[in-house]
Image (cartoon, rainbow over all chains, first blue to last red; front, side, top):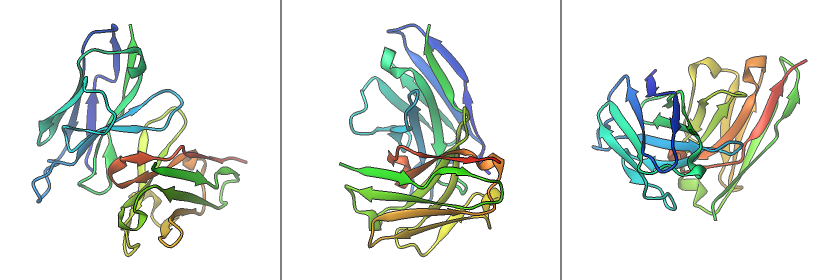
Length: 112
Length: 114
């Protein structure tokens, strides 16, 4: 199985400050069609996960532009330019090119 | 508005069975891959199974093969998960998920306990 490794696992951030989460995969996530199938999800406390970013860097509808995704191959990053209180929760990366699809362990973002 | 509404969870004894259902609306169900993802209490997300749009093929996490079966009825815009020989470690919230994780249901809790 493809292992997705996130860091850090805990991320205390001051309101208004930037935050960055790394996700590394044990195999390349580039498909034969040229796309890279790496998504990012946010799970707020008590809620279902919500997709933020698909195919590395594409923001889903309604996602604030302070969220951005980048990376290639096996190394990816989710950045929040200025953390707001509503960003508290757990963030997961996920690959869906190899079966079984796999998630990172999750990064818990909290306000310092 | 896209909606995925799961049902069928509950308390079941070890070795028992449950069938989860997911009612989909607001998108073209019969052209969408569909998935089940689960989350044990206080834990992360685990992909369980997925099924092609026409239902002709499905994929499972190795550890669940033979016990869980994913299926769909495109005429009813519904997704199912038949779970047999349930174990305590299957206790989790089970989410119905659309293609690539673009939409998630609210989840249904399955508790396996005597």
